[in-house]
Length: 167
Image 1 (cartoon, rainbow, N blue to C red):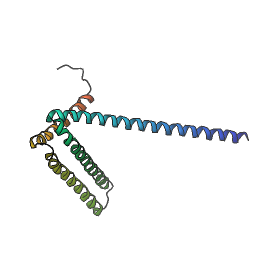
Image 2: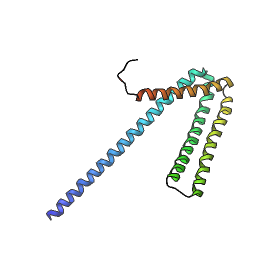
Image 3: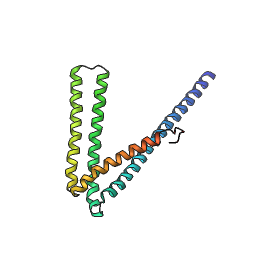
Image 4: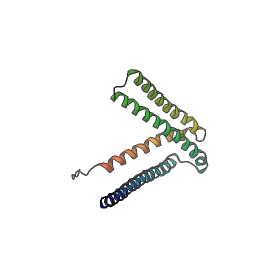
């Protein structure tokens, strides 16, 4: 009887511990996801402000441009994710020494995904030309690259450790 009480108590304690760790893990995951989403929203806000300034977008142009831009971004993201997925599958197949026939299929999938990504990029400029003058479309591509480089520079400068030396 005493042994059964101890066993029941241990089971209840283990259940509580498991529930605690499940809740802790879920909480950490939600916090991480929220942090990632906050970062993405912040970066997109910065990008919108940057592009608006760089392109001198008028309020009238903005009404037409931003919905098209957002749709193109979704298409680019989808295409990029497909390239990443097919790359990972191909890379894994090579590491696992899969048969040549399977690798050939995965290689074709990767090349098709890459081609689709290029198609999305190529069609984007035509969509933009319908809502902005061609010079602003050209400046858009330059501004996006400029913004990307600024973000990379910011990332690198935030991760560099001070050397303690002055130049």
